[in-house]
Length: 292
Image 1 (cartoon, rainbow, N blue to C red):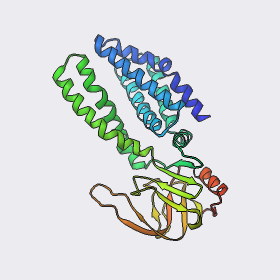
Image 2: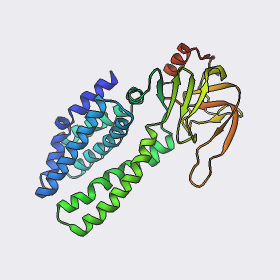
Image 3: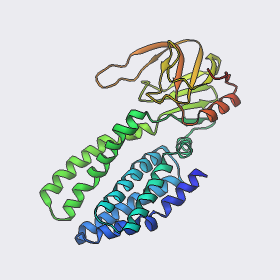
Image 4: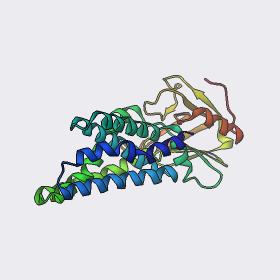
């Protein structure tokens, strides 16, 4: 139901948010106005396609375009767009951005690229990234992609050329970083359980069913002593994976810190739908223990 609501809201953005954008663009010169309108239509069409064909790339598209539409709507209000169109644009784009970040859409996008008999459960976006780095990265993508071409369309050749080169280089460096957040999963496969998280582990790691003692809900903010906490600050509604014997895992390198091994028999992860994950794990004959 959430996904269909997202599709409906996104499909109607030209009607709910379009008038405010048109009002702002009305005062622009011809070529920049035409280019800006084309960019808005292209971003809307890419997002609409992503909602009807959920894939990991679609999650990146909607979670980038959605907040940028909100920023554009707020800019229209500040620029003097009439109250009703401006308020409608902010409400519609805000709802679209909110729904594109829903667990249901994340699950659909993750499993849209699943292979065979596997179920992918996205991992929650770390709060420090969600409230800090991610909004800045999204704004960098938006500003970097359009600033230079708009200046070129306005015949500001030197500034436009410089900003196009610098901006597109920034986009090329930033988009893969955002897309990594769309490819963080804990995956239930016929053989057991796989954790694929480039932010915490150097490589996707398979834990065979016979080596898993249990999985259980973990509501405590602190991980059990000796456990490898892979939640990255997402401290609510996690899942504890307890192994039958210790395993050595290679943690992902961060900044200038090399990848380091860590030996443990307990891991804590944060899938977006922990109850659904535990139910699916139980159906695949992985022992599910009471909450600890």
